[in-house]
Image (cartoon, rainbow, N blue to C red):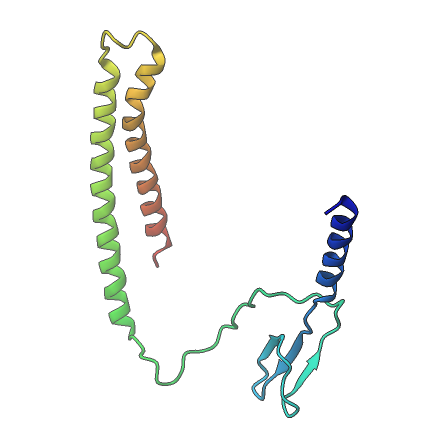
Length: 155
């Protein structure tokens, strides 16, 4: 096959692809919910064809804040207060544990920084040996920051 045949086939392929566009329909049900579809709706449904030039977003919209249904279980104020207090105690315990772990990690890092082995003439090797200890300290610091933020968000 020569080059001209290939070029003609490519152009024909592009032409076919450009013609293969689907129609999009906007359907609104009795409750006012909007649905977009590419299948032809029945004649009795409330659907209209959209213009091909009109852009359609495929990202679902945010749901409106609706009140809880009447049968939805409610929690009285005292029970919720007790739950919030329990949550605060748990978070404070976790914070104390994380603080102890951070102190221990800092101590281990300081011990490792004081050690110099004979095969670490290159300072990069020292940094590589210390990196896991530094990572552990950073992890505990991030956890403490997150716990403090969570405690700050409590009522």
